[in-house]
Image (tube, rainbow, N blue to C red):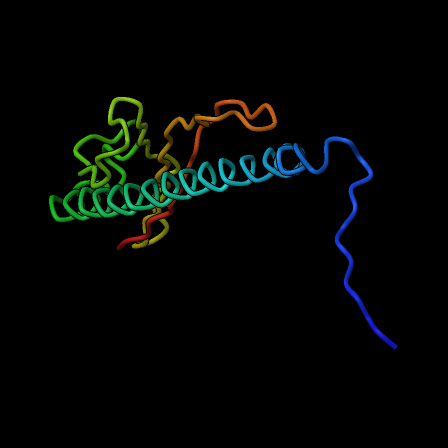
Length: 146
């Protein structure tokens, strides 16, 4: 018995022209959406990490202010509410004018003082996928010192 391979026959008068374009149209949109979405997610995580760095620096600054108050024979909570100034911003890509650093809930129980530090920065998606609205990213720390 003899086996033979025959040439492929086209049943369409145009052949396979345009098949690649059609396949890309079906899959390309999804791939571009995944690419842009992963870039936006990376940018969001990068901003969140930067806020954590700023919040840690703010908590350190609050601890130093509270310790200085105690060394000066003042109440540890003196001046530890409202906006916090003088925090080093070690995230140069964040807009310092839009960055909000506040202190609240200062309480002393015996010799232990707790203060809540909240850092807020606006975040806006460059490519608004699925109708994402601009929002604020917030990070909060609670610092304890004695």
